[in-house]
Length: 477
Ligand SMILES: *Cc1c(COP(=O)(O)O)cnc(C)c1O
Picture 1 (spheres, rainbow, N blue to C red):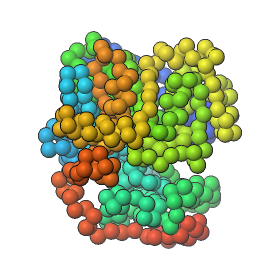
Picture 2: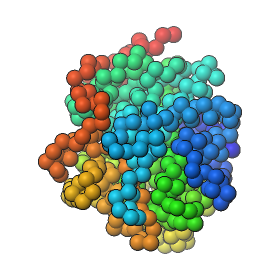
Picture 3: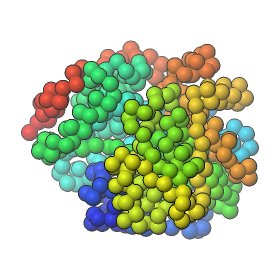
Picture 4: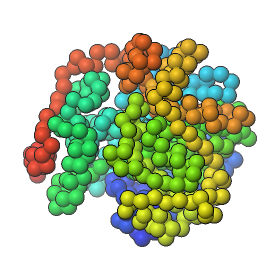
């Protein structure tokens, strides 16, 4: 399997060649040259597989340059019930992503039972093991630099902790994360994890990461890399649970389902789109946004118009507070029939701060063939859903999952079973749970007093030279 760029001007590469990088050299995103097709016989064979075996079956179609036996080992040690144990007391953690049925034809797919209580663990845990494997083969090292305001940073640290050849330098805005989020990250004592709290806001931390990455000499000397959401291996790992969820919610491979996906950077739902392109019987892909509704606007009107960062709202589903969906270009490449020139034309406008509009073009008609529906959810909507689920089903959901359920119920075709993806556990977003229910969310066992553990963090001014000196001092040469 070779990977090509959505902008059409980069050489085709193998899975392991694009594993450690970000964008293709031409500024595009990598996608498989063609999507592997899953036959009816494959679906029949896969229906009853345990998660790790299913993950191997799916991923071996993409990671074709990793020897089968090695990939099997990597996948088996990633998807264990010991890793995905942060579940509700009555969840079947053997399933890794248990399906919770609220009523006939309405389900929640639990994707957030991993170490940091968000679905980001599903992909990031695999990435940690893949990175370690490939770096070891190459005799190389990698220093991951990132900025986080929550889920991504903690998922990356828990995936990379203790891994040979890898260090993580994670910036966060000093005093801006919740006590639980701080405790999750700063209590890690692994010598390869470095938490840096920047006296400033998230955007300043993010700008420092960008500035380091643009210093090509520093970047090369200190082998700096990232683990952002455009990473192809992350997308491919997420394809697996669409299959798992489909099998769990249906009796036979003749049925179709709807998935509802709380969306920000379009990474999660992009994996659903690819699962559908591979032949998984998905009738509807329902995209839910919060008040930051760039993606809902596109699917309703045909206009894709990223917002400026100062027009991005801070909401109570903060992991969906995006102004620009970094994975969206992958879907547009498929929508325009993989015409890279068209993608370049659209994104020359986007990169100049503009927009594109497909309404008056043949692509608007094409769009209806991809099964998408969309909608938006606000703070009051999520409070309402959190209350309703708690009252009607005794199930507590987090704010992002609530956005997905709200839009899922609104947009679903009644004939299709609805599978709402649970992208975080409520314990991560205590403040809004208290606002909705007047009580604290339950914490998974073992995390009750995580705030009391000793913490390791370097507090630093938003000073680029200080950051570089700190990184340089931690990397032995
Ligand atoms: C990252 C995240 C999302 C958004 O996922 P995308 O892949 O960026 O669309 C939704 N919910 C939670 C809890 C997240 O952490």
